[in-house]
Length: 173
Image (cartoon, rainbow, N blue to C red; front, top):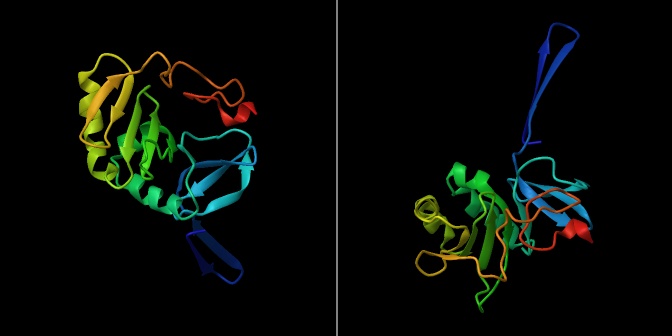
């Protein structure tokens, strides 16, 4: 609960108003999806499948998760809604590397230290390409088609949770 107020009306009426912290995403733990609040708090109660279209965060430590949430809040709302998964991929010897699978079939590879400034180029890059692929924002900004070993996130749906995924879904285990 973010805020609560009590108002007394008459002798025997009480009005209670509450507001909750906004949900920003999910984290998958112990075969259950747990909501993450905008404050970074992960709720204890979870569900077998996500009920909303928030992104699923994976690979982030307890210290990194609030930092990534803060970065996500700096993204334009339209781009926030287009993210299906954010992974702390830490690839190519870059401990700050993240990858984001987008609902429109693209994958964004970026450095968490610079993504807040570079994500604004995403719509322009997508509008100029005719084929799904990887948009690399780590150093500069460029696009490449998916290799034969890679899949578009639109090519595969998990048979358990029905979410788009580009690799084995955790719910298949």
